[in-house]
Image (tube, rainbow, N blue to C red; front, side, top):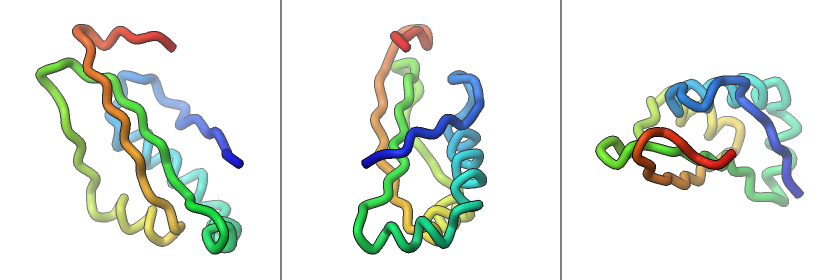
Length: 88
């Protein structure tokens, strides 16, 4: 089972902005997510393409708290490219 949501932001926007938008969308279904979390692992899958010189991720406490309240975890897949170019 999976849901696929799009943040609505361009892929050059900071990762945090995408996550904030997804949490806002998912927050409208907070009770349903909590109920699903009893039987399913709820994960926000983040894929990022970064220049080789810029890497890592930082999530503010309020973002982590919002995700925890919705019973969500994160999975980060980072890929390094020369100029932000990627397939997809």
